[in-house]
Amino acid sequence: MTSLKSLLAACGLSALIGLAATPSLAGSTTYPLTLENCGAEVTFKKAPERAIGLGQNSAEILLLLGLEDKMVGTAFWPSKVLPQLAEANAKVKLLTVEMPTFESMLAENPDFVAVALPSLVGPNSKIAKREDFDKVGVATYLSPSTCLSTKDVKDQYGSRAELWNMDLLYKEIDELSQIFDVADRGQALIADFKAREAKLRGSVAKDGKNLSYVFWFSSPSPSADAYVGGKNSASGFIADLLGGHNAITAEAEWPTVGWESIIAANPDVIVVASLDRNRWELDKTEAKINFLNTDPAVSQTPAVKNKALVVMDGQAMNPTIRTIYGAEQVAEQLKALGLLK
Image 1 (cartoon, rainbow, N blue to C red):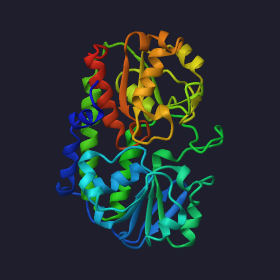
Image 2 (image 1 turned 180 degrees about the vertical axis):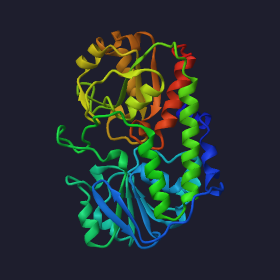
Image 3 (image 1 turned 60 degrees about the horizontal axis):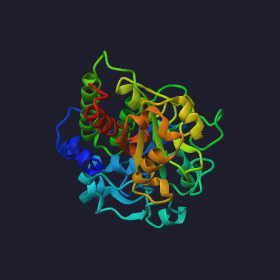
Image 4 (image 1 turned 180 degrees about the horizontal axis):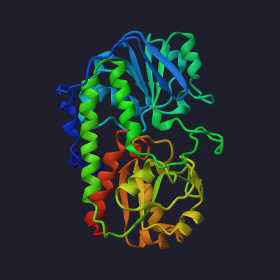
């Protein structure tokens, strides 16, 4: 099996690291800058000097924008930092790979917190609510990709009525680059992602089979329901980008689905997440694949019988900068299996 690290390298991630120096026509930020962000109005009188990246995607965007010298901490990392960002990330204090405490963040005297998920600052957060940061004068910015309604799905991740697309990621990069007055770097990064997206969509044969996918993040145990990517999630976007569709039809961002339902969905491909965390045994890629191959019922699905089991960075199943790389990883493996032209 091809290692995830080599797959990441094959996707050309190193090309991103030089973007901070790429010239662009983007102008300087005029302060005060006011942005509407996930239902809140946030105003910046100047560029932040002591930022925290709360959540992997937020931290990695800041690093890709060359802002490590403006960062005083990061937290909540499901996976290790992108290899090409390791040197920059080493300059930034790691508060914890799990959820930090509110007090541990305030101890770094931050003036800004970029947040990847509503579970980290939402009404049910175990860390703090967004208004808690407001009360101490710390501005927050929540990823637009994760501002979802919880009206129909009573969990912290919410549901998505329309398929996620990269425009929300581009908005996040653009606005973060404006906040820090590095709009030229933001536009260069966006241009790189747009080129990757167009190349991948253009490489999929128009007459290829419309493959059905299940994206399995993890499960607490083999007998428990599986956390899978919902119909309109980043996983659904990857399936669509590759000319297929998500076999999971739930609009919840992260539905828990029983294996009987997954079997009934009859997927052509099962994508298993590679995770660096070790919360559950089935966080491990090898444990997932072993379960799929040995469970008497699941092993009879078309995906398993045809050995259409592919590995993808688990963080790519979230709507993040990793999503396009995840699509590239899946495409490479499926082409090697002869399932994509």
